Amino acid sequence: MFKEILSSSRALPWKIGNDVLPCRPTPLIMGIVNVTPDSFFDGGQHNTLDAAFTHAIKLLDEGAVILDIGGESSRPGSTPVPEQEEINRVCPLVERLVEYAKKSGRRFYISIDTVKSRVAAECMRLGAHIINDISALTMDPDMAKTVADTGASVVLNHIRGNFGTMQQDFTPYENVVKEVHDELMDQVLKLLALKVDPQKICLDPGIGFGKTALDNIDLMKSVEDFLDEGYPVLIGSSRKSYIGKMKGLESSDRLIPTVTAGIIAALGGASCVRVHDVKEAHESMLYLEAMNNGSV
Image (cartoon, rainbow, N blue to C red; front, side, top):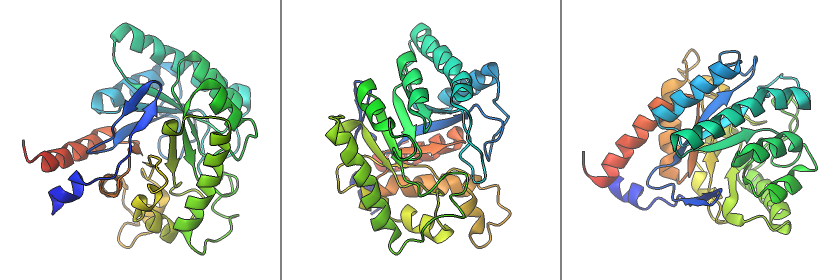
């Protein structure tokens, strides 16, 4: 039965740049590169260009296919970063990675984690491939047009409210899966109206973004429900605080639960998992692939 589950995965392909990636039998791995002093898990660890670049190459070596570069923390209670400061943080790293790809011949994809259209546009101009908008186009009225104008692939991450206050000021859900699905599809329609290639659109239900622990659990169990519209799904559950609200996990470092969440996402049909711990995620996916292939 396990082999049947993997073989029947509904994971959908995702077009990144000019490449259509199959995302099967296991999801693509997106490694997180935070060029920030205050991100919730690794803030300050890679807060210089050299440190961030070294970390990015390490993630590629460990199995990442996509590098997600962020210059502004979205942790609860965080404060917005001025646009130019965010550009100064992320653009030099994008430039260095693009140059590295050219010289090394190594194939990988660069994502920019931002809610600001100008930051996104600058990174795309330098050679990035993906705009990962944690506000799903809601925080910058120009973001949808930027996606269309640049030809970027895009992740629409669901959120209610501002990321600085999202855990305090959000409207409770009556049916979290349906409401998140419907709100994301409203944003998809904005992109389609601008002639964005539908194959480049990826949906992220926004685990941890303005949701209770039970909401997050319901979404994790319902990945497959987001596939019916024909768009790939990204799951970002890495080290998030809701894990520590589960019975017995209050003092967990959240690593093993994060790996488990990735496996659940894979079995549910996710096309991409966004993680801090790439080596562990990659090894878990290799194990799933071996189970699927029936080989070692």
